Image 1 (cartoon, rainbow, N blue to C red):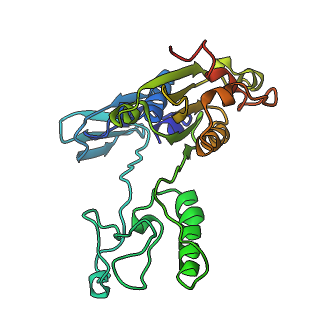
Image 2 (image 1 turned 135 degrees about the vertical axis):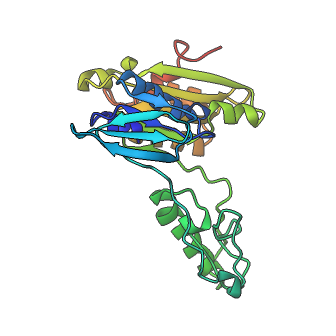
Image 3 (image 1 turned 60 degrees about the vertical axis):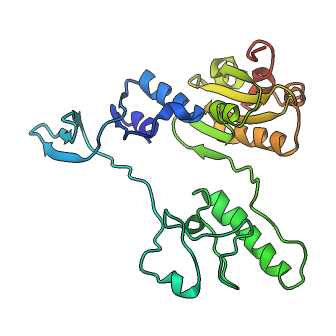
Length: 277
């Protein structure tokens, strides 16, 4: 959100403890980009507002519990979302909830109650429309049909769900971050490239951003990618398809991609110029 509002003159982003942007490749890249645009980032701040005051010139000053003050033209408070399951008395139907209030389901979206299913945000599905509306819907429809002898059940296990943040520039993410790959025990290689290297970015005049991909050193398969730059939401789908097909990064590198397109950047990202040994 901070990157989106930089384009509208936002200058401050306040971040609560335990939500460090550097923990995920895409967030770290987006934060770095915001800083380049002059956005000041206040990390690990106790964000409980003690006082909010608007001065005569229209600016707003917020004093938080730590004693810090932040001054801006306006305030956007992003507090996240939570499932609305309190007071529904789902327990009476035998439906269990998780510690965070989501409906507990198995990999087939079946609850612990016979004949009761759940899908979407309330069931703890990643909170994206393409996950809940597109895929959860298909899983649920398939499994209801399978229960009547209509075929093989469909599972949510191992789904590869990308996401995009439609900021300026865009952020596209899929798969594992560098840290997640290391934590999972992968021996990895990193490919990292500035968007300025992509011919299409130069022709449209949008040179902001960085592309990064994580590769398994032993199998040459792509484990994940974070693309920050123009049309990253489109390019990340190409990476997702390569991952779903189990392609080695060399197949993507050597593909003949239409010139000039943003996706053509993937044939550059995996070359020795940007891929570590």
